[in-house]
Length: 489
Image 1 (cartoon, helix red, strand yellow):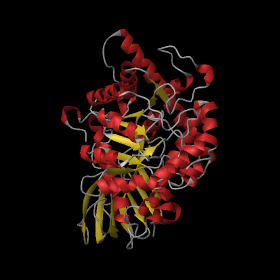
Image 2 (cartoon, one colour):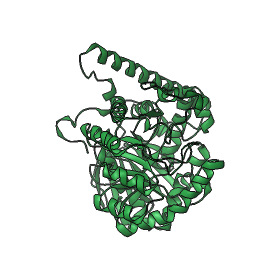
Image 3 (cartoon, one colour):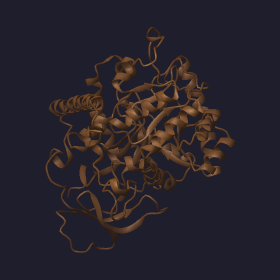
Image 4 (cartoon, helix red, strand yellow):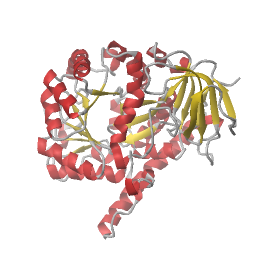
């Protein structure tokens, strides 16, 4: 959580702060601010265009979320509560929301209060809004060929539409682990468009030839200091020395990153990047970790193989992405160090977009390791976070809840829901001084953020209810504002 003398700073505007008086630094700050403003304009323009052509883009509570003033107080009664931590539901509860926080929660009838609206939930379940720990907001809803070739404006338009759909699936917070999501976050926080809270990583930092290096062969050789067209959009950043790593990390923080994403090995979707290759050296990884620590936050690293995981752990990395091919020794080390495993329950080819050739073979290798990975994590008590990494297809993005239900192969319903709420919220808190939403996320208790869902049924007994949000989510609230409401009398 954000703490200390800077805890009151508005994190959403940090990219615009002048960081020194030197002319060069002032110039750089103006350029970055202008670029982010342009991206924000594109998103705002896109939201306006989409609302004009798509009647389904109705805003929260029937009005624009940009309406001035705090949301009206709301009291919920007669519901069963999953608070994000407990192993069972509690019956006959009430919960009061004042502004964007939970002001009261208890059993029985609520004390007299000035709620503008009281919602009788009729025995339905209230649970925290879900948290997605491995999401790519800019990549979720367009084919990779379109993203690589289209104007960046189209990518932002698609991302703004997908942000609304993500929220209505019950994911009120996402951690974005690669992509230029800063302006999208700003637009959502400002109420220009509906969407989840975003913890952005900025560009995915990789090496030449590493996962995420999609440059054509005609773009090499690369001279030191050159920036590719892909890097200019903010999707990735290439670094081949410790000093370049520090530079790229600081560039992400300058734009508002809450944590840093590095690539430590090959990946599935990058054609010329085999899973068994390794990217950064231990000293280069440590350069990123030290720089992130200087900014009060942490580094997460994309890896699959045991050797790549262990190299990251030796460098002080606090979170590992994927690791489907890890071995027992690696799980033991992760558990001993208290390192987070942020991974995905890939169980068949339905969990990925269209693949062919080597990419398909690499994904089959990942699938083959999924079961063993989760069993090792459970055996050794590794801290596990839930995410999906669903990219390049709006139909695939809609499977977030399906992916969550996959977790019941290894965890109980209560453990699964705790993972997607309170546990994921605990990992988000590692962002420390860079936390844009200081406060409690993923739990329902007094003083926590008012992010909650009303579910028709008991999701602890049947996690698959969340795989059909159109049918089973009767209300979605984020930041005290209602974005979906089927609870009207």
